[in-house]
Amino acid sequence: MSDPRPVETWLTDMDGVLVHEEEPIPGAAEFVEALKASGKRFLVLTNNSIFTPRDLRARLLGSGIDVPEDCIWTSALATADFLHAQRPQGTAYVVGEAGLTTAMHEVGYVMTDRQPDYVVLGETRTYSFEAITRAIRLIEAGARFIATNPDPSGPSTQGTLPATGSVAALISTATGRQPYYVGKPNPLMMRSALNRLEAHSETTVMVGDRMDTDIVSGLEAGLRTILVQTGSTRPEHVERFPYRATRVVDSIADLVDLAREAAPEA
Ligand SMILES: [Mg+2]
Image (cartoon, rainbow, N blue to C red):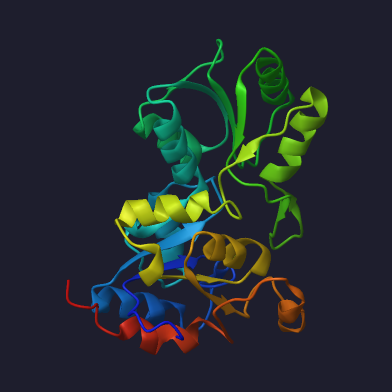
């Protein structure tokens, strides 16, 4: 890395960096083991708000990648963290799955459909017309609109799945109100991850597969960034972006040695 200061902390995206869906990317398991052995702190980040860290740990373990539960940071956790900082002990009407509702409960939020402070939208596979109608009416009545992540769609083995951003667009069209998105590319997701680790931006690296989410938000949070070319951003498109990653590598396998370097003395 061009920066002389040693890397003390790592943040890494999950899908497209460590796994493709359920399939491990070669080098991912070794990378995580190297980080654990080095003693350096790290978090695996995902914009997906469906799952709890415990669920995600189990899914990664199924792919042969052993990430401790407390080393996983989701847009649901970042959203709960943000709302707790903004309005402690608040109330929310939540449209989402266990990943989001558990995170909201853990920061002390009360779920209600009676004059909530916020409507919080996350990823789900079972959106109901009634729930969306309720969300729209609560926003019209004054609830503040928050969404975990802006991704319009997600991958699946069968093809495209509509994601949080698409449902947010539906609610926005009906209400004329835009949500505040907490997940990537909002650098808030990186800053909350740094806070969680009590880490400093200047000595932290963000690894991602998307220039327009992982790399730009890492950059805006003041981190060094590494793009891997095993995911969304095609190699031929890397130079088209108006910002650059600190470093571009083929895959996570190229970072195992760097991850293995011992943590600097505190
Ligand atoms: Mg990704």
